[in-house]
Image (tube, helix red, strand yellow):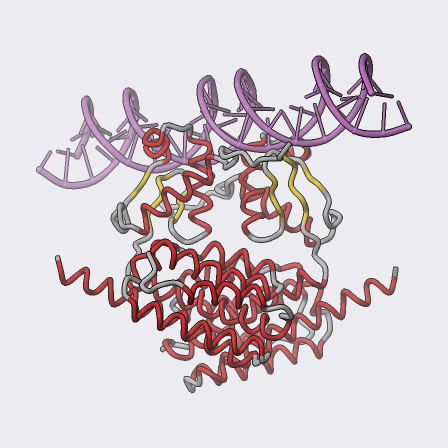
Length: 220
Length: 220
DNA sequence: CAATTGTTTTTTGTATACAATAAACACTAA
DNA sequence: TTAGTGTTTATTGTATACAAAAAACAATTG
């Protein structure tokens, strides 16, 4: 008998949390908008308890601000927010790369991921690219050996950003180049180079996102 | 009429959270020990709801690991944990210092904090030193202009570590020197120096803590 | 009218109730 | 014995109930 993993094994609070997080990032809430516990609970047809937990989780991740005995406030995903977010992420990812270069021993999985991706015909679909990119970074987090760092970066990963940010071929090849260079830093145990290159890599994706954000604003 | 702030205005979940966090750090739980929702709720004489929220908060901060439908597991505050924790903190504090040097304009409050502390007769009491140290770092977080960074560092601040780590005079003066040098980096807008010095400063306190941890083990 | 006070309504914080999952135990069959 | 199975017990996930705080509104007074 195969011990199959039940599909329903995700707590409601988590599901609500991801739903709301995506909604906030997609801009379905206005910046500074007040959202009440009861309203969300009714919208999704669940009780207030899991919604409360989702709210607290989102607040810890910086997407909501909670007020005692009052409704929560949606944090606006504007340029200021994105700069702050990516500044933190860049330095944490950089540290992960540094550690991976310092402590890592077996980079075969990382190379495997990279080679598999490069074998594909460009441009990859958005989902394919997202999956590859996610695996690449996650692998480096693992190699860092710092579980807490992995946890933090995991929470900071926002799939929607990258999905909208990488439609074109030359962006994908640019990412490939960046990743190849990083792999080289790791296998040669060049910690400082890995740190710097990773930092640049992440901040580069920020500029992409800001560019897209700007273009979106001009269209309106 | 003065709008006085009520003393009782702290949610139960937060109070439980800080209590448990301190207990974990003080080592009142064994590493890997399982603690149940119900048990904690009964111990503190509250219902399970706020305890649940506290558990999730602690899990997000890396002090507990939650398991679906099972009791939580206490993360051991051992050398590995402390290294991971301080590595992350060092790079985040360093980034805050970098930003403060880059964006900061008015450093008078920071200098004020420092001067006030240096006027005191050494050694300061543990509480005094903790308070001064906290204010110093918090001020730099503010100057960074990155609210999210401030939030993260705030959650990573563990008062108990520093309280046990700084009993002697020469440690306090060493901290003073380190802080003075940082202030100098900030007012001269030397971002890279601020980054490096802050990183060293935090990692230095880690070595202190590890030393004390080691001494404690030998005594047993 | 403006400002204030008292009352009603809504929304949150916490406690309890109920359902579902997992652990513990007793029992049976090979 | 031991592996497996059904049952009981304990513990968690979620829903609901209740108390307290805030918001909204009405009435009163200057």
